[in-house]
Length: 58
Image 1 (spheres, rainbow, N blue to C red):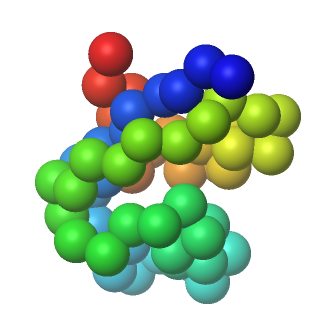
Image 2: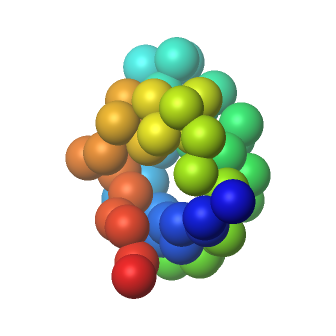
C-alpha cells in the first residue's frame, strides 16, 4: 500500500479534546515530528479532521 508522510506544524494546546486525541492517535509526540503512515480511509479521515495542525510532506 502507498504511504504518506505527515508533519505536525501547530500545537494541540488549547484545542478540543477530540483534536488532541486525533493527534495522539496518529502517533505525534512532538512539534515538527514527521510520521509515515499507510494511506487508508481511516488515516485520511484523521488527517482531514486536524488538517489545520498538520502538513502533508511529499
